[in-house]
Image 1: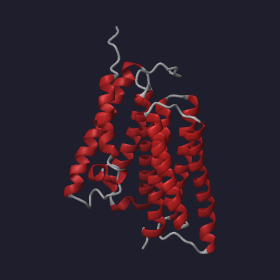
Image 2: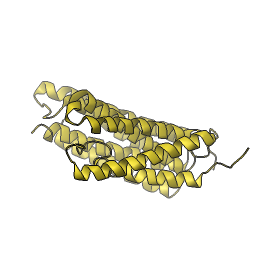
Image 3: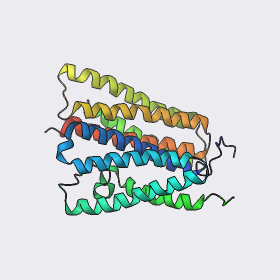
Image 4: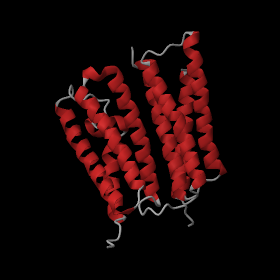
Length: 138
Length: 122
């Protein structure tokens, strides 16, 4: 199978779908939280700031998955683990305090507003990273 | 926003999404049909763009935030061309799956846009 490849070990095969979905989610989270911060920041400042942070981390994860070498590999792990912890912790908190985390942020109710993709994606991301671990060269 | 037009658009986006994902998973690279179908989804979005420009002038006002609506539509317009571009550069089965994922994202965004236009402010 001929492939235009930039040399990244992660941006191949099914990983490309993962990266594309990350890119869409990054776009959605950044645009939406930007709108929320601009128009209704006061109703839930913590949640909307976290949503914006999540968006930035999704952007970083997308870039890290596309990147080459062990440094980007570590960045990819860091961002994806961060997302996973974020969606689990905020998802759990939103069940207890609906006012602090309204339904329209990316991590509330385990990402229900985004079809639970924010919950599933980091798991797939971690599996993918495990599979594409770069060789430990000196 | 016109309710029946948007309903058709959502159904088309879902169908194209499903077809592209199936095509991709059975191992086909992007071809004229899957790329063309995704471009058709984009074409429907462009028509939606024109409708949304004209509708408020003819008294068809959104109940919710017009700014939020335009933000969704603006982002939605970028996604299919990006997926098609990817499909042209990278001609593997996974690019076909990406075309499908893009169309599904469009369907979800259109659904959100109908909620903003018809439900949000009521």
